[in-house]
Image (cartoon, rainbow, N blue to C red; front, side, top):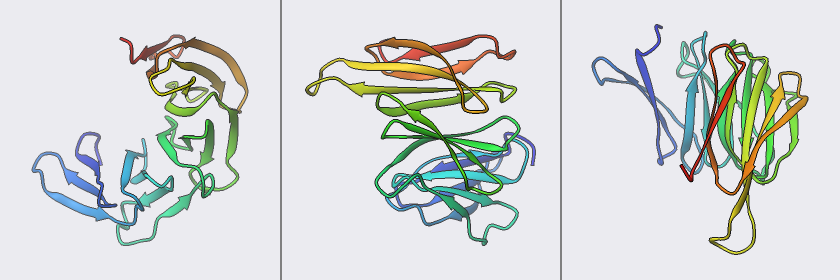
Length: 193
């Protein structure tokens, strides 16, 4: 299916809705997200969707068989996954969790994930370079009482799970991290503008 033809919308009712962009027609409903569906992303090359429930369960749906059961993965029962991204070639799903861990999961098996260390706090942003050779994980940790400054950083990892660099630190939540098209430059944006 060509890019831009379908739209996914996660819902608080625990469903993920698939829409046809040109007509606004509902194409299907993917159920079963405990606590509501938090986010979803299309596979870059296959007719697959990865979705994330607010409870932290990652589901991989084959849209060519919408009635089929999804393949699932979860870090553990006490951890809530917050963000997901497919690698550019689609082989891996990068999952960021609220306990500061990030996981690189092979989408074909949804098993033997690689944990990318403990970060400062909850992971807020994950992203891949266009080649898939590098990715970023940004996270934040509150310091002290409510309203106190937060400590943040953005880390650059290689695709084989090696930490390359600490890119930034500060007192504002990193809300975006993006690679340039050639993968040589990274820009980060924070909540403080």
